[in-house]
Image (cartoon, rainbow, N blue to C red; front, side):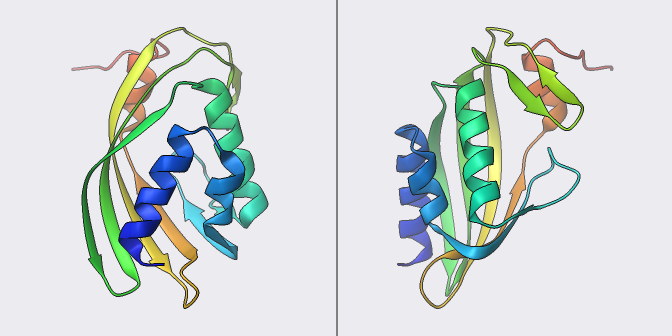
Length: 142
């Protein structure tokens, strides 16, 4: 599987709210760096749990791939992510009750695949402050 296929399958699995399929696209020893967490996610079980928790917090999550750049076994995608926070949200500081508010954010995701076409390393980039502001949890200062 090539990098463009991986981004398409990830998007389809997220949009279908299928955490098991999302996790199946990662190698057993995959590492995911996400600015929301102080430590990287390590392994399929952690990735599946993260996906499940996020889909519970935002059950109408949608990923729209805006663009993909790929070279060999590495690639990057620009993704527009949206959803409504109707479930509790787990954070490193504890659980937040649902706000009922919608978010829409741009995400950059960089992937590296192993020889079998599974994701072994992922780096996610997005604006956490904007997410929290859209949820009404914090206010942006000027």
